[in-house]
Image (cartoon, rainbow, N blue to C red; front, side, top):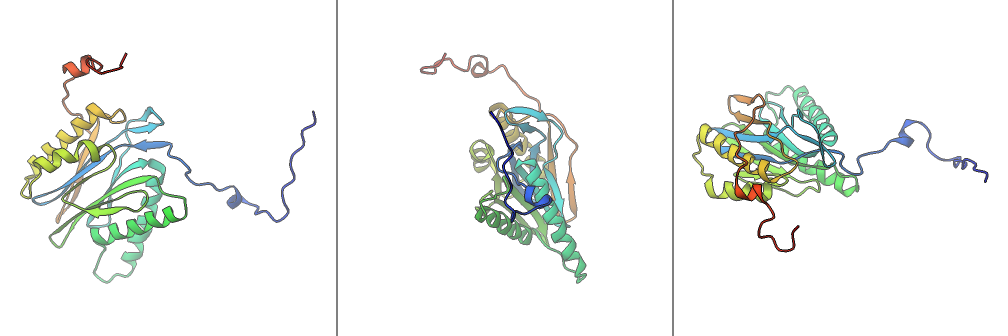
Length: 245
């Protein structure tokens, strides 16, 4: 049988742009981000795992980044799309600084910008495969919001992405209060991350916690949580389950 190459139409676009493709499905992804307001500012936590499909391929992926002077961004979902979003934000902050008018973008403005970016890409049927958490403090006002890959967004006193929406938010609703100290806020985030580690197969026991206040922001060095795996439900997870092996 004779195979011949099909002839390209004469009016097709040539050059690198004709072969350019975008993310059609997520490849390397990060799991939940959990964040809350505390007495002096915002606390945010995320582990450092990067999953290639169902394989935990990378174990040192930083998914929280400072944005400008007043904001902190955390992301779950596709890592390369998160890097693309960081490029957009670098351009935004640079353009804002070029005005040199003594003002700078606060977390509310950055969050609004991200909602427009995510919704715009969704309308082009070319979404950025991320769920984002944006927190910050400007002029004493704490701000915390989230936006999904299709542009759904809201503000709250505590937010989470991924499995955190199902497993961490109930804990936060029960235990969060307005006057949380830094130490109690960290303990609450660690409790949420420990539950996610037990229940989310994509989570790993290597995490960072970031803090942002009026004075500035810090992101902790990676560390591990103390865990306990001898619960009876872990030793025999199918016991009593109808229809299980």
